Image 1: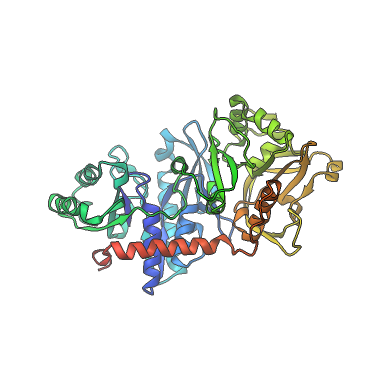
Image 2 (image 1 turned 60 degrees about the horizontal axis):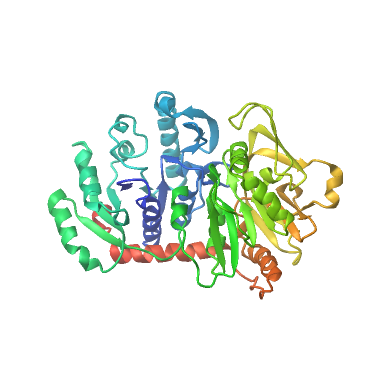
Length: 496
């Protein structure tokens, strides 16, 4: 089990590295996180929701992601409430103050079912567990679902990770170990220092002090890696502020208050010629080459936030002035003309709200979710008729053209007409499009086709469109991560 001294210590990526290293050694690593809190989700082949970080770990292990790897997923939706997902399916909503009273026993049952399902599907595999946050939140220890309770249940060998970049690494580790109960302390087999900058020998004295003070070996010092890896949560997006030397296209992305599925933007972030600029409420939109309105866990609330900040008006002016806008899932819904929530599923009063009015779409929110992987031929941008789009749907609202006659100007972006639409905007060359397909930019040829449309407007040479799916680039990054892990971490005390 990989534990961390805090959220964001690097548990997710260290677990992914461990999975890839064990796979290289001929084992079948089985990634598992009993409970995760995240709005960055993935939909498995069976239509079950799971955290994206466990999907990434599954790919590192060479396995198909399965919601059994993350049997309890909490999706925050504001006002101290979260949607509760058990074994891939939504089972209700929980308030923070009542969560452990109402959901502890069902959650532990879901975790045990997930474990059994995973081990039955892969007999002989080795479980590689990821903890959540800190394992020693003393006010929560008696109700812990996913850290030391699970470690004790499985007698897991635990690796405790601390992020030296944040500062206070000695206090992080010594304090965490000091707060462990006597029965838990023997589970910790080693410590790992993560994100170390500079020459490792500069930390030798610190390593010796830690080992003498705690009696626990420091199994490795992982260096700061320059490669771009998926962020573990939306807070990590704030660290992505660097400018790319070769960037020729700037794309603004709205950092919505209830931002979800931000991993949709990873393929664009990995493009050397693309600079993503995250726009927070109150910040000016400027004149980017395109604007992306990403997914949202609370579409109506985020739409209200755009209006309150003035960004909604800016988006409309931007489009009318010749700008290009692209919405994904909740972002697509906001670009429409009407959003109806007759049952108050979005957390407010039942009723209807006006959208930005940039696409002639009406959306109705219903209890049932669309949860499925999809694949379809692309009709837009025009070009190669064999170009495919692939990804997954994860949404409650269902959209359709408000007026059948609007189909004269508003066209589907794919042969599967319910996946998204596009249309020209104004008389200045503007364009607006959107899709329900998460992961749309992972299709390398389609991504480059879309980017080349932006480049042509600037008089730039087109990029090659014969590029592989983003999953191949992700595999390369995982291999580099595993190379560094093998070079800097001694696994033997964990494995024996």
